[in-house]
Image (tube, rainbow over all chains, first blue to last red; front, side, top):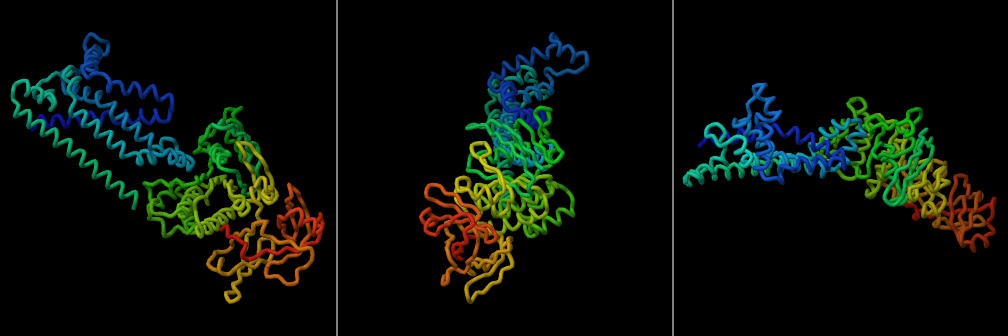
Amino acid sequence: MPHILLFTLTIAAISTVCIAPVALALAAWSWRAGTKGLVVDAIAALPLVLPPTAVGFVMLEILSRRSPVGALLQRMGVEILFTPKAVVLACGVMSFPLMFTAFRVAIETSDRRYFDVARTLGASPVRAFLRVTLPLAWRGLLSGLLLAFCRALGEFGATILIAGNIPGRTQTLALAIYDRVQNGSDHEAAILVLYVVAMAWALVAISSVLIAQQRRRFAA
Amino acid sequence: MIEIDVRLPLAPFTLQVRCSLSANVTALVGRSGSGKTSLVESIAGLRRAQGRIAIDDVTLLDSDRGIDLPPERRSIGYVPQDAALFPHFRVAENVRFGGSDQQRFDSLVAALELESLLNRAPASLSGGERQRVALARALMTQPRLLLLDEPLASIDQPLRERILLYLRRVRDLGIPMIYVTHQPFEALALSSWCVVLRDGGVAAEGASRAVLADAEVAGSVENVFEVSQPQHDPILGITRVTTSDGLALVLPYDQVAEARFPLVVRISADDVVIFGARPTSISSRNVFEGTVTSLRISEGIVDLTVSAPAPLTVRITRAAAEDLGIADGSRVWLALRSRAFRIVG
């Protein structure tokens, strides 16, 4: 069981790290674009409102050998479906809306005047964003990362469609719990659930400590 | 020379301002909601106005030619009303955000007395300290124009007094400054030129003393003096000072004993008493002989300008003016009660 835990944590971490720069860039662009950004907001939020199995089905179709994308990947020798890469992809796609929305809200609610004043002091929009807006929005950004990470830990629907449930290869904690319940191993399922609860609690506790430290630093 | 010709649609009206400013300090005066902040934000490039803005031979905005420099390329120092110090940086980092020139940093820290604040977090500073840090930060960019949006708003005495002192030091650096305020006496204390905004348009423009002598524009009529060379006499309870116009004034010692000079003081035109002949026995320590140089009558109120020889504004009733036989060129004596003076800062 420890290897399932390690595998799940690794997959969730990789998918979170992979989507974070994209979510941040899109959220920043959408913030600066004003009303034009609403279109991006709506598209980015789509996986959140669709059933995970529907999203999994769309990904399955796109990555299958019948589709141009799948065919191209095959010619390049890249295999994704039913591999750990598929688990990362499913987790990334399904947790992206949560991260994007949290980033968008964090940036939107940071006081824009600081960004404006930074620009009057000679900072380019990118420098003003990185040095002023981003550090001020960090609590929201951190909760976005944690939300996305936790969502990735629990991802099930899309994963089972494009990665299957292969023990030792693509089986994550969520899939393993399902597997144990199906097999009547309720005791093992309960232990896995405890793992998930412990991980989620630890993450929330770490973020609370970090936020409290930062609050004290600003007030000092 | 700062040339401004801008249009900016706002919710209640369209801001439409056209003026040419050549004074070292220009006051932008108007009530809340008259468009003052929107105008300075347009000059700073933070609002997308239409029209033309140029400083000397540098065009910042010219809609016809498709020029609209972003804020970072305008070289305009902007100090918003609440200072907007970056809360995640210490004071030193805030100041250095404007530039890395160590010599300039050292001289600004010394001029604005920031040494003891450099390691402090912005959240721990008082309103006046924040304004000084924001001022230093804006000056680090070596701006071609400094925009100050109500720097004294929400600051009480004696902090107000200190900030005004620092602002006068900045004025003496020779950087052109646009100073936004809704208090006419603040405008008189710092500026030589004044633009009055009302509902997004220019309601009046001219020399500050002339424009703000109009009660309709200023709301009230005040005499404002920058005073220095204090000679305290605690036993008699007075402090003798000299105004920048060379007038010798007597102020109450208890009110200015702790003040830092040069100091700006004001007295309302309503608090100046006028005599048709030299008063022989009077409690007021400030009695001046002068000549009426202008006289304006409006609904029973007479506003006089008296050259004593510094210009003083007096407001009396029409009945008093007729009793005293006051006309242009009349010889009069003015008495200014020491305790009627208020410290501006």
